[in-house]
Image 1 (cartoon, one colour):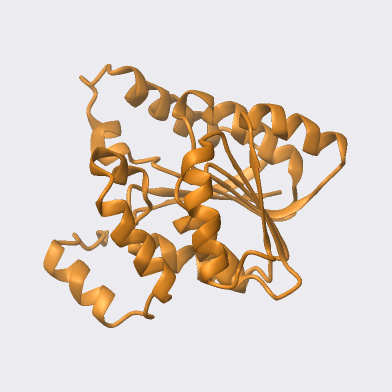
Image 2: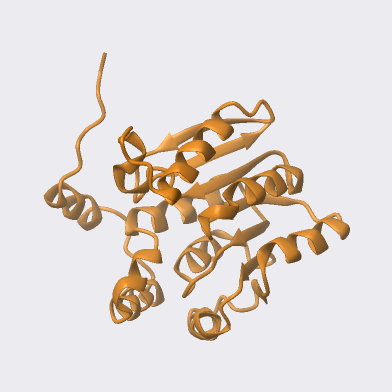
Length: 218
């Protein structure tokens, strides 16, 4: 049986050199995040930026929900793939990083497509469901303790044949360590099993960045 190619830093750099160039503001966000110390680990990988933009275009998405925005790199990546009349609702609870993100969106001329909401995401999801909003894509990259809650809400809010994309499902490779009983690692392990057994979606794990699970609602 064939095996997946192991990606070294050298290969990763080669891929980036021969892939689509980042938008200048995407690059600016990445540079800014470098100044944040440990917090920069909340940023998605460059390969994930390209994937999110491309999957948005391929899916012909017009309405996206994002749970977890940080400084806006993933948000901007998906917005770049939306048509001019597209809408991305971005949820986060950190007003400070959100101000920075909105400045980046404006600089990239994407602010008209993006609506940010600052409050605990589960509260906002409850309100959005009351409005019967449906989305083509829902992207989850927030607190891991609520991943299952976010996912269950997403299944209800995404259109049939729509996509749910979840970040950090490989958890730096720790999910394969049977002896690792650390709380967040266990949460991710259990979440991955839960999604695998969910008959409401079909799913695959893609090993880019820290791992994307891509689910299609059946």
